[in-house]
Structures are given as structure tokens and as C-alpha cells.
Length: 150
Image 1: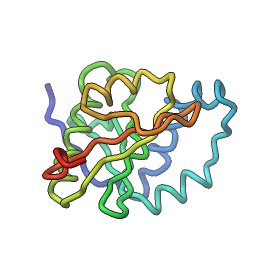
Image 2: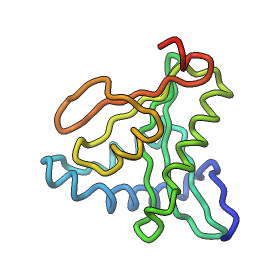
Image 3: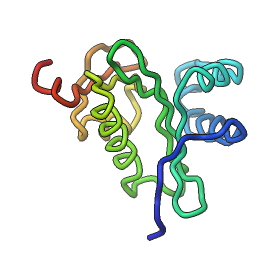
Image 4: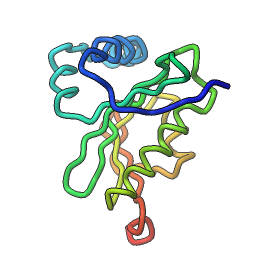
């Protein structure tokens, strides 16, 4: 297997990341009557911490984080279709957990479509449901020294 890395994204990679999110999420957006908004994605990109997953010299994933109030919010975790079901989502989650611990973050939070197979991945990594806002589920994972106190 080629060497992999999760590294900060560059501005010129925004279009690639947006296309990946749109490709992966369009089924859910259509199903739940949500319109894709390039302007919103651009604003979220600017406000967030964007990282790309590389396998060798190939981009195979994208994640966006936003940090506020002792929490990291996982706003996007996407894997290219041909690389799914190979553990990449779990590897990216493990990197986010390590990053959160290094920053003394209390919890990682996210929202996911309730009918997405990603719900199972997040539960396998210890995320618990905080709130149901159909069609979304809000989930959280206490991290670091805070994991036992929540």
C-alpha cells in the first residue's frame, strides 16, 4: 500500500473538495430537499480547517474542522467513491481524535444524515447521539482527559 497522509489543504484545492462533497452528498441533498450552495461551501472553507487525505500522489479524501469553545466540529469527512470501505474514514477520525487531544479539546461534534451509512462508522468510533433534528443526527465524542467526565 502506498504511504498515506492527512495534510492541510491549499486554496487551489477547494474546487476539488467541493466537487467531492457534492458528488458524495447529492443523493442525501436531493432526498431531503436541500440545495447545494457553492457560496456556502466557499464561506465554510474559509472559516474552517481543511485537510486532504493523500495516498501516495492521489487525493482520496477531504475533511473540514471548525474549532470553537473547547470543541472541534467535524463538518465534512469525505472519501472518494473508489476508496470507500477500506478504513480511510476511520483513519481520518483517528487523526481528528489525536488532533483534539493535542489541543486539549473536550469533545468532537458533528451532524450526519440519519439515513447515512456514516452513522455506523461514527458509532463504532464511540460517538453518541446528542440530538435528533430530522433529517440530521447530532453526535458527540468526549476526548482526552474529558472522555470520562462527560
